[in-house]
Image 1 (spheres, helix red, strand yellow):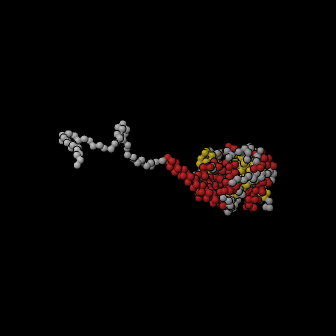
Image 2: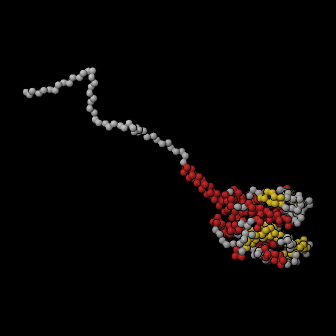
Length: 376
């Protein structure tokens, strides 16, 4: 047997602290470093400038698309009636205007109504006007041709010029005007007076400046109550609605108790030119952004206007007309053209009162010379 000595038993004193047991090494944490925080979820952003901007752009785009389609529909409906064919693409295209090579566009504006007072049922063109526009210097003039002018109508003999359309349509009336006044007409527009009523109302009224020689203004009881009559306007600048504008273009002041129309039909043609300028003032590009308003205007034109203007010519012609300032658009009458009267009273073989050139029946030499001076 081996004599091995056993290690002595370790006796612990109850009052003493037990030795610390040996543990695996753990590095001490740096007390100077902050303790890591638990990750917290970021709140979702409910407002974003980028999203707001994108939304606004989409809304603006949707607005213009809607307006554009609406305008196209309005224009298409009217163009089918007035121009017979074509669409918005024809309007956006552009072609040279007739007469542009000569530097002047002459448009024959003709107004008529089947229920014009004094001529029930007759399509007499009681408003005949040459609208002449320079293509080079933003000037133009409106020259009224009196309805009682006694002219020779080819194939029918002598008669008042307002009978030419009834005898042979617009082509015959154009032939008479070109022959007597030595002008080359580029286009025509035959306008029912109802277009004045509807267009002015669609524009929200127009502004006119009544300048009657009578201090009371204008009064014509010949306009019936059913048509918004009698016509009564004070002198000065004022806004009138469609019915009043229509009455103003038709009133001659030839009824008993009328006042403010010393030159009867010549005053009426003056007012017709005023109404045309008033409409011109309200026509601008902003109407494109208002389909409700331009739809009414297109409808008025579509129902009441006949013309030989092509759609591809319309934009250029409108731009030319609208580009002439009112101060450069002369309002002229043969009764007072450059301070001179070129008309004389005349009694026809049948006893009718009419008008002829002061130079004599069918002698338009002086009138033609005056018009040539305007075109220079």
